[in-house]
Image (cartoon, rainbow, N blue to C red; front, side):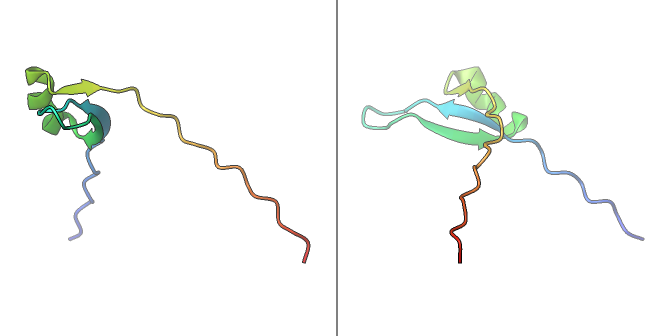
Length: 63
């Protein structure tokens, strides 16, 4: 019997506020469950999701 693979939880972008004077804010990717304690304590700030970036194709040089 084969079990269906459970989908990975969706990770969203959050800004992690610095905890010390010398730390810089950084962006982390967390699931809703992982982010809940940080959001409640004010350590995390939700960021909008970025649209997928379209990488332009590089023109090929004639060979």
